[in-house]
Length: 382
Image (cartoon, rainbow, N blue to C red):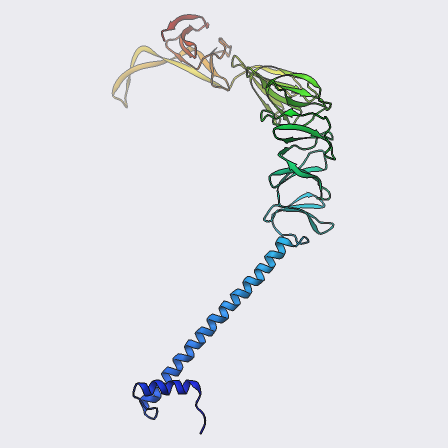
């Protein structure tokens, strides 16, 4: 007699326990249902095990690929790549690194950011929050990342900072001066231009030194920055703005309230302390000695009443005053006649006409009444 398989034996055992005989129709149906159910359960379990095994295999492959991408020095990602030079790529993803396309290898890993010089092959890189320099044509470190702050090389030298003190180094990382200067955020550009660089004296004022560490312009500024088009901008201890040329020669005296350089228009807008706007070209020629931003007609309420139909009431008729007011860039106002002749300087925060030839002029010093000649005829009590 042929030996029964396990499923048949299990089915018969269940059938016997329920009091059913395999020879009966009901027993055969029960056996078939049981065997089919077991088959389906085993199939589901097999699929689940296979799916889990596939997931583990996929994870293993992904981790293997990820580890290769992370650790293989020859691997170059295909995204977030920026060319530092024709031969060096900065991969600014994760992980961040420099890659030499000639050698086909990573040169520096863990690079947080880089900063290129406009006229030198040594480029700043940051790693572990420290600054160093690498060669932009090889991607290899020249000066290890060891400084708290560092600035780009200019005219063969660069400033670096440790413990709040600035040192000047050459392209091999050697100290040039043998002394330090104090750091201040009031200087935006620690770079040499035509042999001079702004520097803080220990008395808190900013001047300019040469590459020998000697003062060529004595400290008198509170802030200094270099403009990309060849000017040193800044202001003194009294907040007066001015301009110096690259070599330190005076361009605009430090007697202005504000200076704004517009290179697309080839103009320099300078606002005097009395709020008068002036315009210079980039050669220092005065183009406009008295500039203003807007002209506003002035009106006053006369003694005549007119019917205002939409209000169904009478209101005072407005008349045009003898003068207008002009506005400067910092929203100060002055009086101007209708021929465009300036009557007063822009000394007032606002001006209103109170009659045809009288004007209420408000300022921080008080409020005055001026006639249409600009002469004071009364003062409002404060």
